[in-house]
Image 1 (cartoon, rainbow, N blue to C red):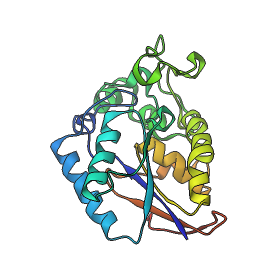
Image 2 (tube, one colour; image 1 turned 90 degrees about the horizontal axis):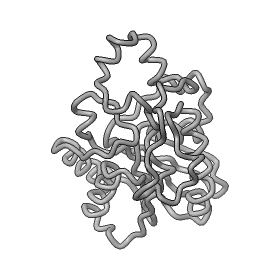
Image 3 (cartoon, rainbow, N blue to C red; image 1 turned 180 degrees about the vertical axis):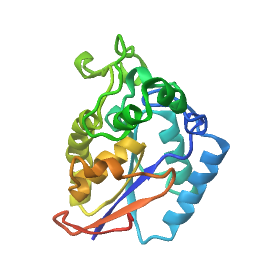
Image 4 (cartoon, one colour; image 1 turned 135 degrees about the horizontal axis):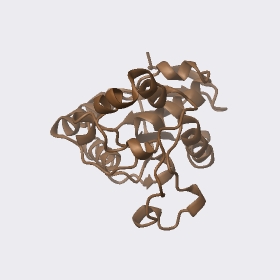
Length: 224
């Protein structure tokens, strides 16, 4: 058997302030740091042999990955940071307080933007600057906002092209990323319908472990 471990980063400053985050680059809170130490403790109890760590280019996920590696004495492992594993892009909503947007747009509309597989949040007027980790990204790939479906279309091909070959080689893999990133992967791994994915929640710092046979047929998961 081979295992894929999915972890959402610890609580971020934006989580604590109830703000939309998306591609905004925010730090972990003290609670988020402690959550991630607890994540490492939980992973230590699993029968896993992690051989590679994958994360986004956003520092809340990178910091969480580093904490887990450090606590588990896995700093020698390769770690890959990819923008394709970023959180869903929340467009013009990012940085805004979620309760304020509920008052402005209505609870129903905000719920659709947050959980529907196909709904787009309001778009930015222009894409983010192509600097730092995005300087070599095709300009056409820089979003103005993303539905979970559009995020799925960048996340899952990356998973198939880069992570699946490692799993097929029998090597356990750890992905430390974001709520929407992991929801997209859960949808793919468990073949969840477009409407049913709306109800899937991913808690900060809670490790999800997927066990596969040699052909990557799903055998077991601890996701409830």
